[in-house]
Amino acid sequence: MINMKSRPINNKPPEERELPRGKKGEYLVMLQLMLMKGFIVLPVYPQLPGLEVFKSLAFIRWTILSLFTGYALVLVAPGLFSIRKSLTPLPYPTENNQLVTTGIYHVVRHPLYSGVLFR
Image (cartoon, rainbow, N blue to C red; front, side, top):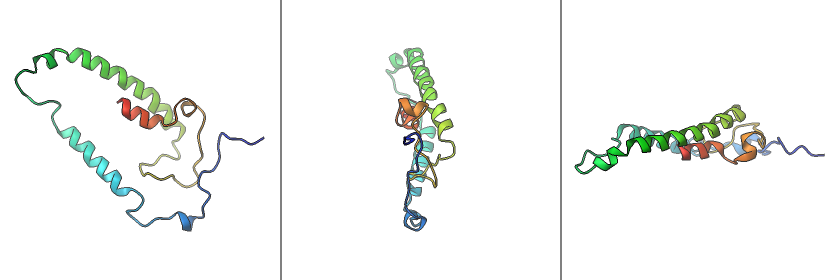
């Protein structure tokens, strides 16, 4: 019987897998980091007149945000734990990684992406 729970993903020899610097997605990671820093620096909402309703609903917004953040943590924490050896910010797999189909990956195909979307 074949064990489908873990199998090598990349069977190509190393010389065929290597890409020149900059072609692996490093620039995309740098762009993502710059965008995240920009969102941190930008104000949450503009200080315009007429936003009293928006400010009065702050409790409801924070409650919903807290629920979504909790759900995101439920997805991300086990996902990170399951692939801790294969985790990389680059958009290509690491050497000698394994396909994970147990734990949270049995329920959700991409728990890290799902967690980021819920947060």
